[in-house]
Length: 500
Image 1 (tube, rainbow, N blue to C red):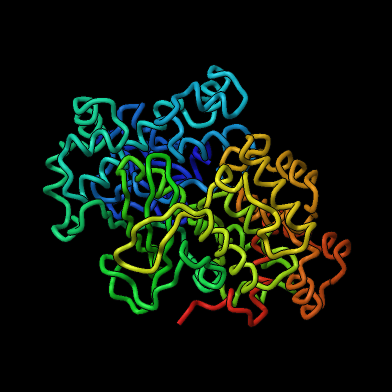
Image 2 (image 1 turned 120 degrees about the horizontal axis):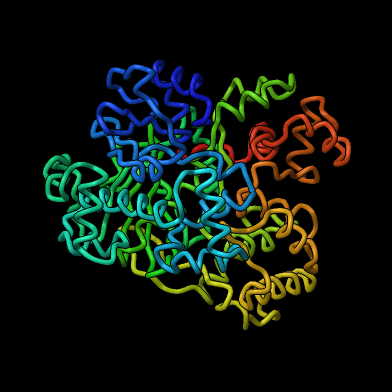
């Protein structure tokens, strides 16, 4: 979009927050860059240039606006919608792969050379993988400086910088303030009283309808790994709506997150065993709640169908509840085949108790990390209280995941991964597509064989047979995963209700 100058100028002049994250405005006369919704008086059009990423602005010599804080914009929805090389690369960078494995590791995961990766990123984003990762490190550093009392040296290494000097230089260059000045300017209540706990706001594009999003997570919560608190814990706010909590398996350790919906943001409280996991934890929480979606584009497309229009108008901004761990969700999808939500939770809870990694949670009832595939690879099928064929499906899945023959992650190629899943014994279209929808993030994944979808279609006067419904749903592309959320919402199932 940044190449459409006229459209970008209109968005800046109207301060349209819907375009935050789609592009950034660099002001030639001041040397700063802003988000489109910056509350400052818009500059003259001839003084504006537009860039597709914060990293491109920084690489061109611009510093972040202190008023609109463009480094805290929602992420670009492009990387959720697209499945090409650049989108997959951006999802991996957001997951901290460059900081942990370098550009060589990033390229190896994607199956391309480092030169090909750099060429593609420069062509689309005006910056290479190192610059994009550097911009992300700067944002993480700012969060740690403003929301914790960590010494600056600890902040530097936790944010992924190789030295304190590099950290200082980057912060000054990006924010035109030293790290100590950033901490001085931060609200006094921002620093968490509990060591290792970070409180922050996760921005999103409005509208956001939280009922099915948090309702789904709460109704399917695995005891010991997830829970719903009727009131938000300390540090997340006093709103009585409540909060979803869960444990996180992270590259350097583990964490516990509390997430609560607010009118203009998601309140987030992270307790991390290692602060170096902050970037990854934030990225996974955003993916879990689908916060980088573009609800205006989604709802506009779905509203064009007369059958869906009333559902969209009633509760616009529905998101797809996703996951923080793709392998975990695949295991849970198999456990949920042809059984009730309660039965699926029971099966998962047994696996967690027997094979999960214990964690300490002084604030609630979380007890374990969900077992990783390697912990389940030696699972005794006879210990599973389920039909023999489903036992074989589960053990085959975890063995393939543990061996690395099947990879599920932010870098997954959606069509290839779906085909690989369908090749496994016991995997039909429903299981493969629900994993594509909620684990891989494919916005066009569709479930025409799902009982709830077919029942809703019949009630709305839509075709209810899988083939006929798939034909009708072609008009909803590329947002069929969101259409599923609207169809599911016609039922009175607990997944559609924000818990009391």
